[in-house]
Amino acid sequence: MIKRQDRKAIKAKKHLRVRKKIFGTPERPRLSVYRSLNNIYAQIINDVTGTTIVAASTIEKAVQEKVAFGGNIEAAKAVGQAIAEKAKAQGVTSVVFDRGGSIYHGRIKALADAAREAGLEF
Image (cartoon, rainbow, N blue to C red; front, side):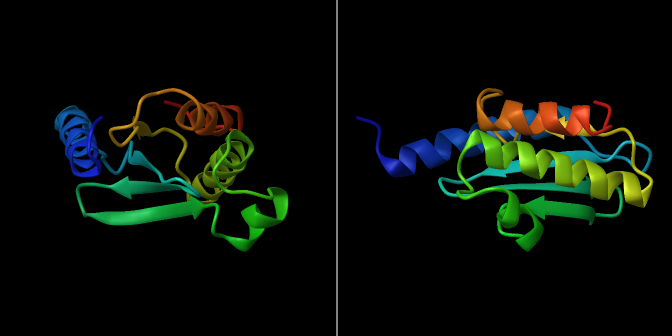
C-alpha cells in the first residue's frame, strides 16, 4: 500500500514534469486545474507577470447553485463553463492547459471539454 506522503510526492513530481513544458504568456495564458476530494479549482494565469487573470471553483456561489456536490463530473463541467465565460469577458480566447499532475481523465477531462465547448481554445 502506498502511503499518503508518497502519493503527494508522486503527484508533485508529475506536476513539476508538466510545468517544465507548459508556460503561460499574455497572448496564451495557462489554465491551471487543481482537483481535491470535494472540490475542483481552475484559474487562468499569466506566467510572465505571475498574475491570475480569472479563477473559478466549486466554492463560488454561482457554481454551487448549479451543482449539489463539488467533487463530481457535473461540478467539473460547471467550473469549466464558468472559467470559459469569465475568460471571454476578460478577452482571453486561447489558453495552454495545465492538468496539475493529475491524469487527463474523469473530472479533469470534463472540465477541459466544458471549457472548450464554452469557447476556449487549447
